Image 1: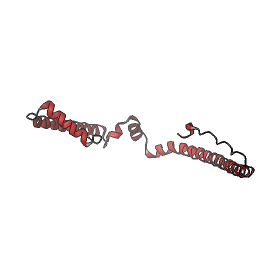
Image 2: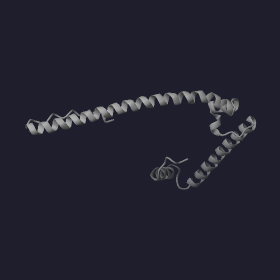
Image 3: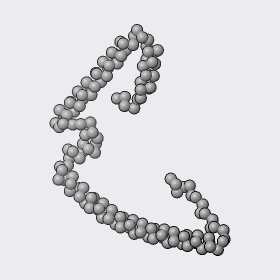
Image 4: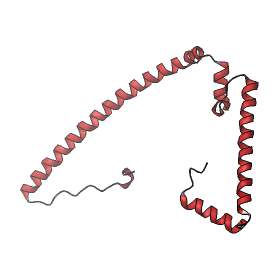
Amino acid sequence: MFENLGGLEIMALILLALFIIGPDRLPKAISDTMGFLRKVRGMARNATSDLSRELGTNIELEDLHPKTFLRKHLLSEAEEEALRKPFQEAYREVRKTTDSAYNEVKSTADALNLDKDKSETTRSVTGATAGSEPAPKSAVRYDDAT
């Protein structure tokens, strides 16, 4: 319940409650708040048990999502698998095609980078022996860094 509150936040809340409510009424306020939380938890537990009793299944909170509810109560596992299988096969085919295209593009890019590196090495060696100025560096593109 308080997983996103740190120690300082909890201490600040306690001090704020102490200043607002006062030290004489603080224990009663804490016990009233705890009683309220117990009642809310009990009502939630009762609502869940009423729903599972009326629907005839062991229901979880996640099962109340409309898609999950329909899938669970209208489709058997075999029907769900029959619906899922064509999509999985299509996904595998598309994945295989895109992977092969990716590998081709990657190998071409690697080959171009090797050719570029060789030409830069050759240019730097010939430029150093000729005594001319080194080639200007290419500009750094900051939009590529992200």
